Amino acid sequence: MPIDFIFFSLIFVGLNILLDFISVKFHDLPGIDFLFFAPWYAGVIYSPGKALMLGMIILVIHASMRLKIAHFILVSFPGPILAAYLGNILGYGGFWLSLLVYYAVSSIIVLAMRGLGAKYVTFMAINLIMNVTLFFLVPFVI
Image 1 (spheres, rainbow, N blue to C red):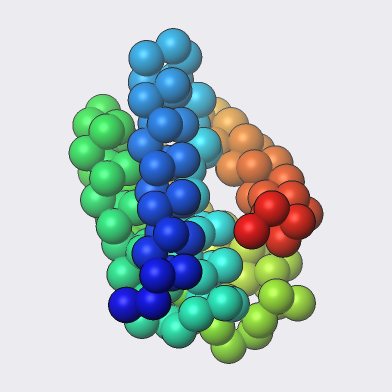
Image 2 (image 1 turned 90 degrees about the vertical axis):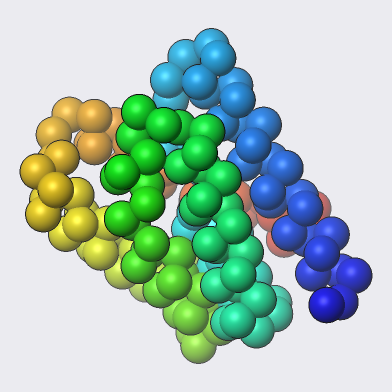
């Protein structure tokens, strides 16, 4: 495993743990996670296999830290899988299409679980702001 991928993964896993801790401890903020961005960006930079591995690690850690909504998080596994592959196939320029597909799949899953409502709309809004901010910010940092 290349050291740069390990470092890349540790950054996103660590940040996800920190954001989960802050969100759970101080105020429940839905949509603050790296379930889309980390696997998508890893797919752009690395291989889909590495991106998928990172996405599944973040998925499990995120669910274990957010036990109240863990069932929603765990069944959302198709989202990070698609993000990893779309990042690899479409590249950096495919961000918007990848994000749209991710939200469509997530919405179908939430609808099937009868979880569509105000909390999900809040999740989508916060998550959209976070992912778009990361899209413009991360290339200058990493």
